[in-house]
Length: 480
Length: 47
Image (tube, rainbow over all chains, first blue to last red; front, side):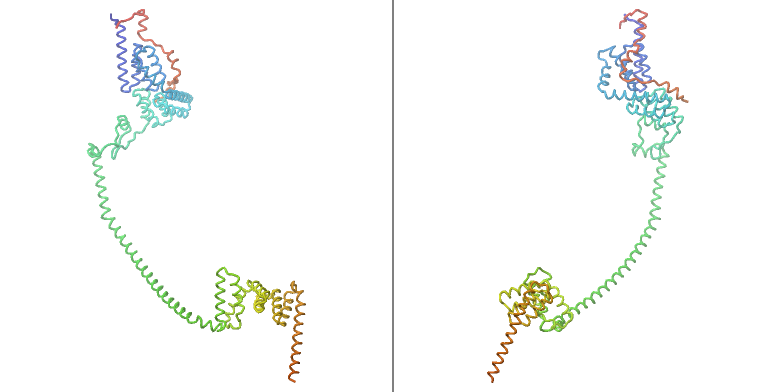
């Protein structure tokens, strides 16, 4: 048995559900929600309608309403209910639930601020809410309204268009958009080489997914819009004329200018080259002249080497002088031994300064002696003393005499020279050395020995005199 | 011309997700069938 009133309620509910479904498919969310609510008014157990209403709410950003519908749906019919699936998906993603709650809090703060007239604060909060939950139509609507209040119509339009993309038939969104369009100055937007669009056309293209920048060459050349083709042809003709002008007018004058610059620079380089060549030939002449001078000087030098110096120095001392000079220079340039130093000093000492006629050579000899004598004085004295101790009197005299010359204030050299001379029987010279020692070095430790030495020398001289006088008398008597 | 204050006054505070239960309790889950029941005494229909 059929119950006609209840059947009718069912049918109406189902019809309204179908209506809501059709609207939801074309994103008429507001209309869909209205139909579905009415469907449930006729039959609260229409699970499909309730679940779809929850989905519509969720798409509009009304998560609490959506969850409410799904929970009720599940409670009314828990057998293979799609609400289970929806609720599980939401509950399995706690981050999304937290985002929804955060967005709701921002929205509430924004609404509170807007009610109190703090538009800037409200805008900040609502922007955050929309940023967290981009489907939050309610927050987008309020943000659009605040932008309109601030007369930021472009921003308002942007956010309201986004809201309209979610719900095409939200009456408040459409009303706000109409207000925005009234206040916006229509602008043409360039969409191609010669094509422009009004904002409304651009918006339509955006919604329909038309991208003018992706037009291919085929569509560009065979476009039905004839004026654009004409403009394109004009542009090509203009470019060709420009190329022709450049080729026939500018290029020749530029070429002539380059040629002139090249010629001028070539002349400059030629003159510079000539000047350089002249300078080089002049320098070559100078080099030749200088070489001649060098050769002449060399020949002169070769001619004067030995003869001139022989004349200047003198025949006898020639070899000795140059040997000493070479040895001196050699010692200056290397590590030398005591023997080498002593030999050079003795060579210099034996050189006769009077035999050297050249003043220049004399100066050289003096310089060598001044350098060598102070260094060699002690060595020569020691050699002389050694010879004296050995009993080699003649060599002792030679070395000690040299030592006394090297260091004229050396008391030891004078004293032992005196002693060597005394032993050699040269008493007068010995006396001179002793006395000279006392003169140049009166505080010498050897001074105490000098009186005895002098006494002995004088005694020896007296003895010599006596023996000579006796010999003379003997000879006289013999002759007589 | 939009009256800003009036428009703002139409907006309502949103609820966070923990208020779903409270929202359910507030929701009056009734349909015309329930009204009809009141008149018919809970007559069950057949499909």
